[in-house]
Image (cartoon, rainbow over the protein chains, first blue to last red):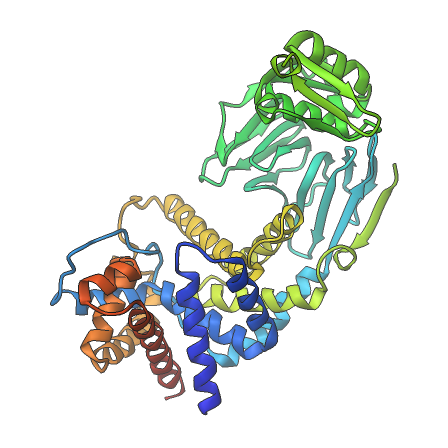
Length: 322
Length: 172
């Protein structure tokens, strides 16, 4: 009993420490060790963290606070929740089984350096992965999920009416309504989607939702839809450019273009000046030919490209003349 | 050039660690929402975001980051649900709980209010200021003329008291 009480006090202390604006490395490591040490610690912490965040606690405190108004009022912590039911110990075992299993059903596909490869999923869907792409797929009896962790992928999804297919990339979700489409994870917060057949529904983390139909594309930047869905020419583009080694850039950061070139380059490419990576570029680039793209960057955007035998360094012109 | 297929064990931390974290996140999410489908979604999404972030740079604490991501995802889902239901954005959710949450919520509220009433008044005041008004520990210490250590002790003891009250209330 004293032991239980001790563990509960420790859990409360950690809830408090995590509630502070910053956590240092030593404290973070100590917290992970403490959580790893004992299932009881994890249960107590999860319960107390939920209690601390709960609406029920805020409501109970509000009733007591009326008598003693504070001098300083800041924004309350988290308050957009409905009162939550308190987790009972009896449920714990059930939860453990229910949650551990799906994680084991995940398959990870990775394409190495170069042009990428095709993969056929267990449901008959086909996915073409770009070079250096990583896709995690989980096929459950009632739903199918794919997470594009890196790179670019063209999906040709086998339609199943009662088993939806969703592609997650960053905080963007693409729900498939039976279709062929391309998802390009250009950066963690920059995703573009183009639909070649059928339709998809695009959900940004900000709750915006848009349905893209054949020949339409959209871009999500920093969790928001960057523009209205735009049409692209399906007669010109029967399949995504990257599959034939091209990339059509329309006002994208140079860093995104260079990322695509990296799939094909035989040496690491580095920006000496990070600001250069943010500079906007437009045009059609043959990314499967790194030298040509780097030549174009040099000619059109005033950058110097240097090779030192181990890596390729892109510097701005001004810096090069210093 | 080759495409490799393998399961997550190969490059991620040992599977059992993720399972333990997943279980803890599930327990947390389950206590925060009555939607079982949402619990699974939140846990899976949290774990997949964690895997990504750990690859870029190891966080100060994997567990702390996991719980923060899960809390944010719950807020997002909740907002989205409210939008679909056509409810006004700024309405206080606690004013209008879902019908099936009312009973459990009321019981929990009664237990919490009783536990707060039984608390030493100073401790209760510290908890109100920290959790309800979001005051920093330093500001609370200053206002109430307490040491920082004392403020922290009141918060953690107060939380442990409330937790205990709910745990024994569930058994009864």
